Every structure is written in structure tokens, then in C-alpha cells.
Image (tube, rainbow, N blue to C red; front, side, top):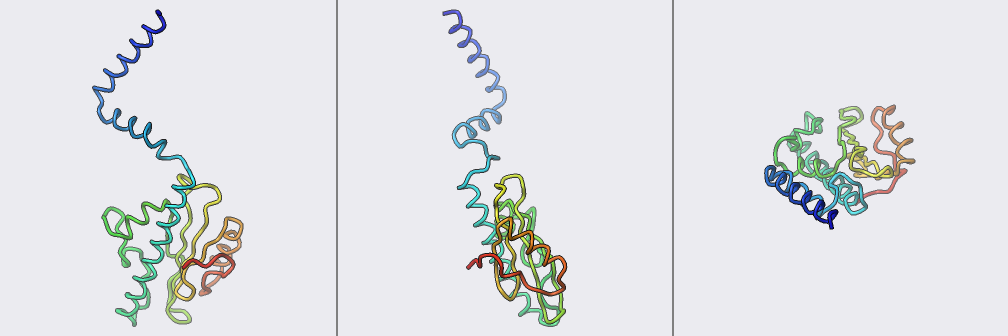
Length: 173
């Protein structure tokens, strides 16, 4: 009986402490209801990959428009030129934040005609170890690589001057 009274006292003290900190109460309720927001699970990983793919599709579409509007310049070589604003609420910005991927232009030039290459690599926080790497270029679209495939593909990309994404992965529509 004494243990039960002690437990009830602890619970009452805990509730009073939470009443002093409503944000902590809300965060605790969210975590109880939805689990740890930083844990990696298959559903979250699938959403993040889909967001990364959608972001790359959007970048590709924006690049096509940019080249049509600036044929003498070539493709946009900066994410902000295709609609990325890290602090804003642009569609591209939201997709990139939701993806938990680092997306960067690896190459963008006029060598052998206008070309660009964008690499999207999963961040270690929030992604499983087997999360794929994505590559976007103007010639082939989006290619998806397993971690094993990405080792060779990324090495080829870093040493090539104007080669497109290696077609050693799975093409993404």
C-alpha cells in the first residue's frame, strides 16, 4: 500500500511539473502518440525517398525552363536559381527539408553542350544505412543507386568532366 501511495505522489509531482512547462507536456504527448520523431522506420524512409525524388523531378523541370529562358547561359548552376530557399516555403525547399537528403549540384557547365549533374545523398540522421543515392542529369533523368552501386557511381562522377549519371542503378520515372 505504501508503494502505491509513493507512486501516486510521484505521478502527482510529475503532473505539477508538466503544468509548469506546457511545451514539454506537448512534446511528451506527441512522442507517446507517434513515437520518436528521430527514429528510422520503413514508412518514414519511404516518404523521405519519395520527397527526394520529387525534389529532383522539380529541379529537372526548373532546369528545362531555365535553359529555355537563358539559352546563352545554359543551365542554372545554383539551387536558388531553380527555386530553393532554405528558410522559405517554396515547394522545392519543403521537399528538400522533408527528404533528409543533401542535394547538390556536382557539375554544371557548357562543356560538350549545356549539362548539369545533381547528386542527392541521404543524411545519416533520419535515414537507414541502406538508403539509396540519387543522381539527376539532363540526359538520363534520375538514377537510383544502392549503397554498393553508389560507391562506384559517385567515384566515376567525381572524376568525369561531363559524363551523365552512370546507368548502373535503377532508372526512376
